[in-house]
Image (tube, rainbow, N blue to C red):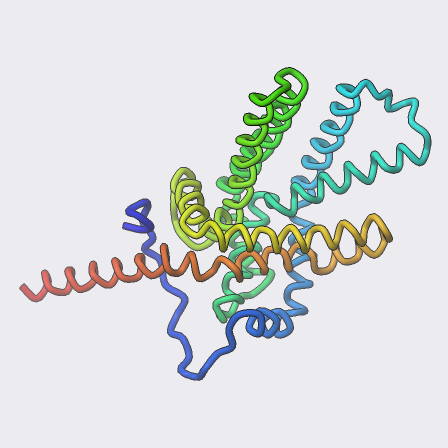
Length: 296
């Protein structure tokens, strides 16, 4: 059993909570962040190093997408001025950064999600050893998710271009709207995909299914959480456009771990309520049944 009966979640729980009162909400968010600040920096650096290949792939995709859009708009990239070329370069960087921020980098994001999830639940985690253990453990599934993301990016871009230039009018507007809504929901699923992958032993189809159900069942809260993640990303991109070196420093030191932390912190209780607690309850029932059978 598991969330709505999908998957087998027989894994150890987060441990026994302490009796003393704990902070909640924004106070707890900053308490954890300050307490683990240097670990978040270490995690961010490790995450970037292990995401180099994924970052290169996304950068190539973003550059190709920008070049393709220019050709569709009949703009000759070679005829652009230096300032115009700089603008195009910045757009490509922002596009690539946004994709990485919202969708992750595959297995490295799953590994980071495991470490961060432990911190959110006040559990100990070794940044280096735990990270590489779960990078290896989730490498195949994480890589498949990353490849699927690239395909989804491409198909979404093709669909938007087609419905814009080949299907004008209300029908084109309707189809673009449907495509954008589906894309946003798919992006929101990534707030759950990697932490489910890191915590539970599930097939990939069950990870996607549960992530979609979790997004839909708590949609208003998930949309708000997603908006907060976008806001953090926007701030970093805004700083990058105004001062590229400052943006690069922030991204290199803290952004990625901070973004993952924010997403997991805001969705952690949803995972607990609809996946972890039913899993622990089912495990308890199975143990009681096994004990009863042994006594008989």
